[in-house]
Image 1 (tube, rainbow, N blue to C red):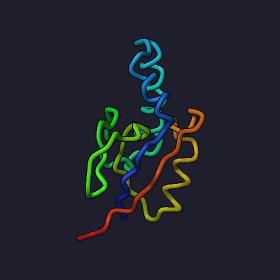
Image 2 (image 1 turned 180 degrees about the vertical axis):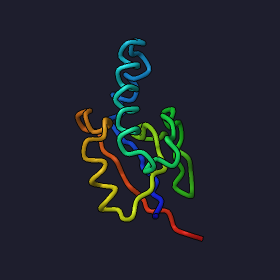
Image 3 (image 1 turned 90 degrees about the vertical axis):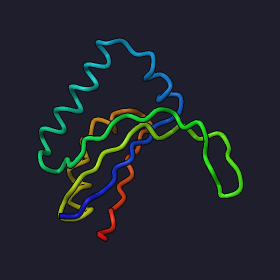
Image 4 (image 1 turned 120 degrees about the vertical axis):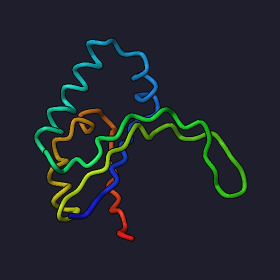
Length: 109
């Protein structure tokens, strides 16, 4: 099995708005994520977590304000990136307009 880092992106305003949702909204969102996790089973190595907005970003010479578009991560596994893509078609993160998932294959060392 290959391991992949899944990075969840959405518009910065959506990530900021998540800080102000009701408990009922938060529970509904988490229920959708847990249903997907249960559906894909052992694909999930580390469910990960939401991330706080980036406060700084470095380019090698200086630090500047981050983009605040990354909203979380997971570590997943599958036989191939194509197999993992097929499992992510109905991922709850993609229900948010403008949301994307980046899949990065982890190098074996």
